[in-house]
Length: 371
Ligand SMILES: [Fe+2]
Image (cartoon, rainbow, N blue to C red):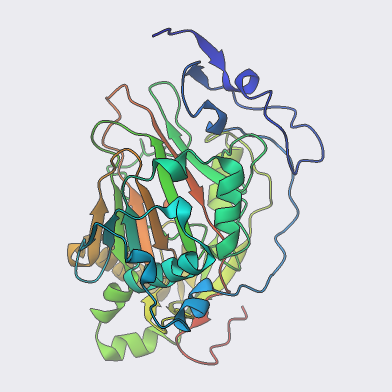
């Protein structure tokens, strides 16, 4: 195998640009081997500026599935459907995601809402279907979120990429911490954070790089009714400022394409389709509880983060294998990367397709979400 290297910028120069009014002037060069099968999906950091996101009406596809007689018909042909844990996660074999029609995709959304996490093995057709297919796939579930700072395939800002190899890293900057475990719900600072998220790895180390998940529904259920009743009256600020500052400091690609935002969300939210209540704070983006003194807010958040961190009984761990596609409901789960493969000369390259969901619905009806 040749070890000739080239720059992604030139490697990708023949790709059709779509949705960018002006050519992106700069990109971060990434050294790659020419033969890499998914070179067209390597991270590209255009400095195209985006306007603020506009509110939009999200219609959850799970509602459509609720009207069906057989709400799990898409699993009829599965060779196995296995629970990962009793309350979080299902692993499926023998179902081709790429072949699901609109009805099947609606059922899938409902199943992910109910299980929090669904792992599909043997999905090479899906992964190899390419970015135009990914667009259609994701848009079935809602308006696709465009990440303000991360790398995306050139011409396709709708896909967030994670990437690490022996020379480059664009998501796992964890050297200043004793752990890479950072529980979070993706971009929860948006007014309408993601709902059903699809994620897959194009390349992964032989072992390691597992993704951790936890059920925020289960986390809430562990708390006493009196405390939950209090939490339901609270709302918290979620902020994208630190993430933007991180990029502005020259790390992770060094690009901020949309000004960071802060939004207020309920501390306990209700899933619009299942009606389930879930804790909705995360260490990465939640900053303070509105209306409490700083020490009160810090103490409650620290307690909740500690609870999320150490409750292994709420968690599930996805071990990646080639051609695995994972879907989770970002509204009722949190997740974390695991960076335990830094010493290996291995590439970990993943793509995320995520629509924006509804503005989080407070579990306490009528909770005022103004500042
Ligand atoms: Fe994430």
